[in-house]
Image 1 (tube, helix red, strand yellow):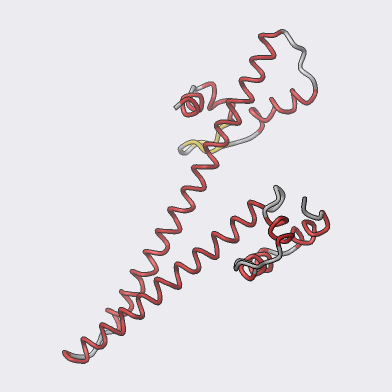
Image 2 (image 1 turned 120 degrees about the vertical axis):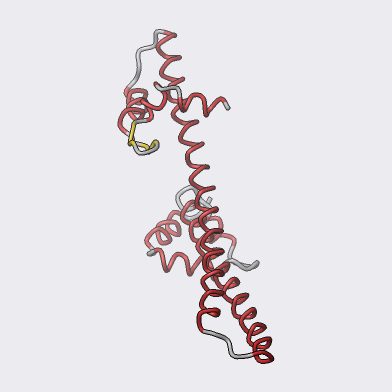
Length: 180
């Protein structure tokens, strides 16, 4: 169990300082109590985001380095046949940047899909809990009502609409997604 004071200190860091701390402690041999705190429920999503940012930045750097190496090879070739044009060099850099941004977009989409699957499972579970209580004739307790109210109070995007999880369930859309 990580120290609550360490978690509190880490939570207080701004995003840049937090990202720097995660990056500097990525190699093996980093203090285990730090990683225990970084992977605690309070910080695990922020830690994942910081690592994802580091990975994206490294991918951009690698792609830019590939573009520069390619540029050097291109210049050597052109040294034999003529001078490089600025447009050709800029185009190679743009292609490298586009490739890295596409890779990052795929990672973001995968995270979004994971979040959507979780939201669907939670909404279906809450609805099933409410239905089971009604079938059993149980009087809902305040915590039940608080849980159930989330289905009507939260908002989610669906196409060009913003709807509640309850509406998604009523339309049968999320129920179908949850069952496959």
